[in-house]
Image 1 (cartoon, protein in one colour):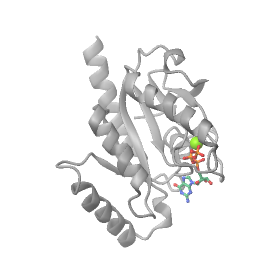
Image 2 (cartoon, rainbow, N blue to C red):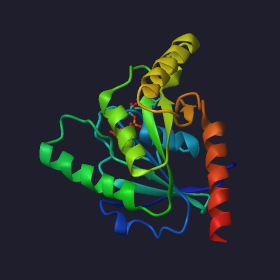
Image 3 (tube, rainbow, N blue to C red):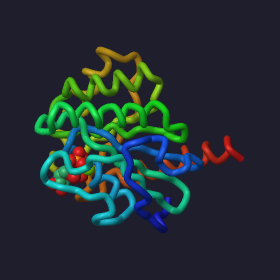
Image 4 (cartoon, rainbow, N blue to C red):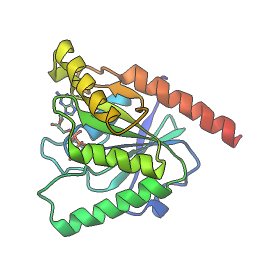
Amino acid sequence: MEITSAEFVMSNTDYKKCPTPNKPEYAFIGRSNVGKSSLINMLVNRNSLAKTSGKPGKTQLINHFIVNKEWFVADLPGYGYAKVSKKSRATFHNFTVDFLQYRPNLLCVFVLLDARIPPQKIDLEFMEYCGVKGIPFVMCFTKTDKLKTGDLNQSIENYKKKMFEQWEEIPRIFISSSVNKNGQDDILDFIENLNTGFKNKND
Ligand SMILES: Nc1nc2c(ncn2[C@@H]2O[C@H](COP(=O)(O)OP(=O)(O)OP(=O)(O)O)[C@@H](O)[C@H]2O)c(=O)[nH]1
Ligand SMILES: [Mg+2]
């Protein structure tokens, strides 16, 4: 898919106030600092459309972007950032959960996982939650530029093994790097396919 435009739409904490759900939508989630905002920028060929930061906890709202005037991206706050107070953690947890469960046009959640680190409880639990609630998701490894191919393959194999302890089937896996643009074509092809499905269903 060729990217012709990408614009910020709005920020929210309430899924009911998000843009009219009449277009296919994809959400990016994962632990704070995993690279959600950077991946969004990489996908749409923009340097700073979604705000990124070296410090975890940058994205604190549901941020909507529209791409090619035909699909939405939602950049979500990260989970598992210990420095936020318990209260504010609970608050964004709730609005993110409501968003994931009730946003009608959400076609797929990209669960981002840092390729350099072993499977983390919080990520496994989040994916389990998606499974239980029937929220479609894929796994997307980030920061793959920081690993040699052999180490990356090993890391993915370890992850698969861990997933198969819990799941009979595991979701599709993407690898990505916002530095060398690894994964851009695969992810955009995947989105394009789902967009077509959404259009056919709603025409
Ligand atoms: N080397 C490398 N660094 C990356 C990559 N993606 C993100 N980073 C760096 O990781 C840090 C966090 O990136 P963000 O995109 O802000 O992460 P986030 O998941 O949106 O973080 P929060 O909004 O705080 O939850 C930044 O310093 C990025 O430059 C990548 O693919 N490769
Ligand atoms: Mg962010």
